[in-house]
Length: 227
Image (cartoon, rainbow, N blue to C red; front, side):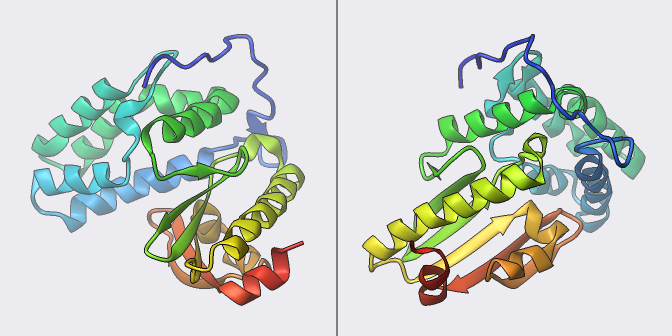
């Protein structure tokens, strides 16, 4: 992916959560660090540890914007196959991912844009509905993905999400080959009860990875969201 046109002067709105006095993505960063330790403990072979991490970072090496060199990050992560201890492994990941973590903390607007553009440029299965929602189609199923978008605020995210679901419902209604509707997102892990209010039945929540998945019957989805 080429250089992204990120504006150095763009305002980084709500970089901190005023209610908690923390950065917007502090929780996700803490979850990631705990997960790194779990990966080290779970996999006894160094290469298996690296492979497990990179399998969940499919777009990492395509990142290339404003101090973020995805290829170098990927290379530094691969070197951690030789880490002799959990501490060395986690500290090495902290160092490798430091530019990205700094962007998440200090410039969340840029982080969200970079993440969105990376998926658009590297995942030919991704169909974007709006700035926070995209879907993938495979084997008679449509899977919804919610992008990191905390800078927009809860009200705006909810509005865009509902609008996006209505657009997806049109797609599902027009394509009888789509038999199943799934969702895979960080927000299911964080607030499974919220996903349930939107009609999704929880399939799995992985607190360590900060991810979750759910499903909703096709007819129920159309009943709720087809205008």
